[in-house]
Length: 266
Image (tube, rainbow, N blue to C red; front, side, top):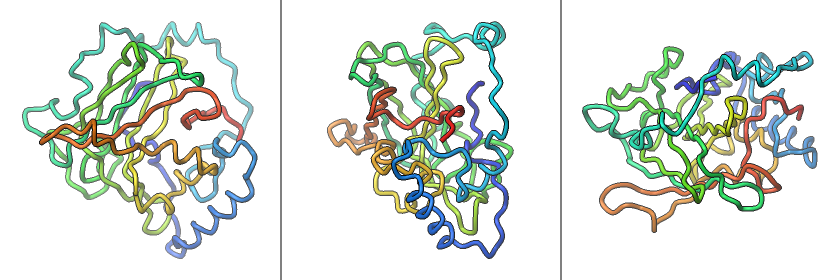
C-alpha cells in the first residue's frame, strides 16, 4: 500500500448535465441532518453526493487477514531510509517549482496529548495549478517539471513535523457539473508496522469551495471538519521565504483528526 500521486478522489463516475450544484448541496444538507448524532465525524461508506462511493464502497462482509502474513510481503520502513531533505518538496529537481511556497508544520499526538515520536509521515498533493503527476489526471492545467508533489519525514521526540512545499491549487473532478475540490494536501501516517497506516487530508483556511465539496461535507460533524483545516501562523512564517500553516494531528480521543477508516461502517 505505497503512496502515489494518484488523487484519492479520482475515478468518480461522470454526472449527467442536469445535475446542478444546488441539487448536490440539497442532498448534502439532507444527509447531514439524517446522520446527526450517529458518529457523524466518520462519513458513511455510501454518501450519495460523493458519487464514486456508489462504485467503491464495500458491499460484502470484510475478509479477515492476519497481520503477520501481510508484513512478510509488505515494504519495511525504518528511520535510515528517510533522508532529512525529503521534507522539502521544492528542492527535488534542478529548478524551483512555480507557485506560492509554504511551510506546513505541526505535532502528532495521542488523545492525552502525548507526542507520537518517530512517526513516518508522507504527503502528496497537486501542483500550484491543481494537477497531479499521474496518467489519470487529465485536468488541462500545466504540469510543473520541477515539482513532483510527494515528500516524507519522521516526527521528532516532541511529535513535531515540518514540510516545505508549494500551496496546491483546486482542481475539477467529474462528480457533478462544475465540481471543484478545495486545495488540500494528503497525509499518510505509519505506525510501527505496515498494517498501521492512516490517511487523511489537510485543507487551507477560508476556502470558498468547502460548502460545495461532497467529500469534505461527507464528514457531517462540523467540529470534525474544522479539525482538518490548518491555521495560518505568522510567527512561523519565514521572512522573505514562505507563509506558514500549522496543522496538528490527534490520533485518538474525542478531538481526534478525521482519518479515512476503510473498515468503518458509518
